[in-house]
Length: 328
Image 1: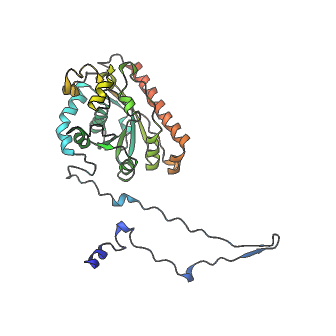
Image 2: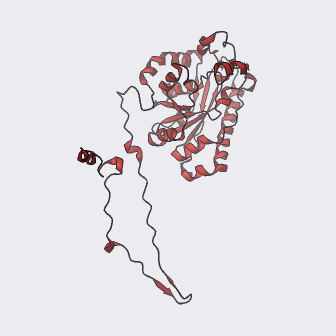
Image 3: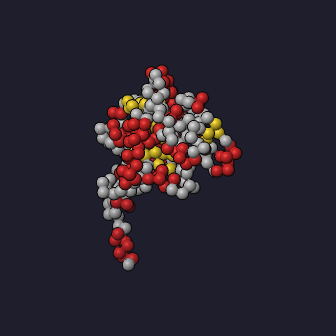
């Protein structure tokens, strides 16, 4: 039994780095020859530093996409998507009448991190961005969303968000998705602060944290594609918060809007028919800086602030061009 285990864990296994090259013998090793410098009365012995061994590309260990597989390693289910697609397309085509610009800026094969503004109670922006890529892009691809599992304590809800592509926001998860699997990943740098905004604060971007999404993109060697979304603020506005009910229910916030709480759970689908506009901005390439740039706090914050400014400028421009909340 022991010999069987050793046979499967031999040095030929790719999990152990593949075949180990034979080391050069002592007779093949270069000999350092000392030279005497009379002017300084010293001997100089040349030193040769060993060349660093290249890091292995772990993409070869990631299984290829199987079109017959219904659930991937992240829990995303294509079967659930097919069941939900008629509902998503109804909102996309007829309710929000989404208008898309710059969809060609989304890579067709390589990984990319999409950074968007975020708003509204039960925000509809993420599903509409997902459907924009699914319906308008020349090479439709799955979109994964990095976020906190806020509803994981509620039966069925946490599992459903996982089935449609929500992945726990962890650096290791993001790196594997972007670098190893070359996927498209969506992140909302405003976080909770974006979805808590009241109606009078609409389209005013909150701070993008400490630039964690920029570090992720630098280490993965992928571009950041800024995304500006107009319409979500009016589709599910928030007029007030009730802190007491927030603590009582355990929700991240307890909003008051046109449908909640008086319509209860039905409010989840009672979006107002605001006209959506989604603009994909020019990608920000970060691969030329190298992974060490992720440790430069000032540089990371500068890039995060620059991307935030680009999205804010785009939002202001789109709002100036808009004639009507409902008709665009």
